[in-house]
Image (cartoon, rainbow, N blue to C red; front, side, top):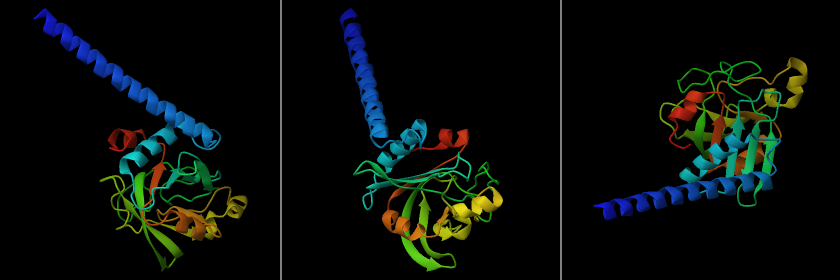
Length: 219
């Protein structure tokens, strides 16, 4: 009996130790990547770790080289849209992005999955097909998280260009203009960014909402 107890304790100790080592290795790799991509003055480390965790779980098979992070914890006067080239380990794009009109003024404070809410949604998305619509060249998004962003397609939440997303708009009003929930990009950059991330790349939208972190199955 005593021998079996000792064996059991040994096994438990080994499993705990191996798990701890795996976590340490993952965190070490993530921190090295964070440093290599020179993100310290751009993206909060915890945000990057959350985005990377989801990116690896989703593991897009079609356009897995790119991870886009939208950081709505920052005001719209700051660049908060980042396209990361995960293959070459560098920042590919860094620019401004608008949030929804009912999400807030300068800062994004309210998020929703409801149709007609005109609010931005948080969480992980996959990019899909492009099309020409009322906002010009646009990119459809599919929300991956039920109850959080799963109505993205139904709500016509797409990436498109807008004059109110240009930095010149900030000089006039003190903030970017706002969309009906879409992440709108500056005109002149929108097409090349859309063509880079279309067809199955991962987007992570972050905001100051602790309840999201508790609900998400990806982080």
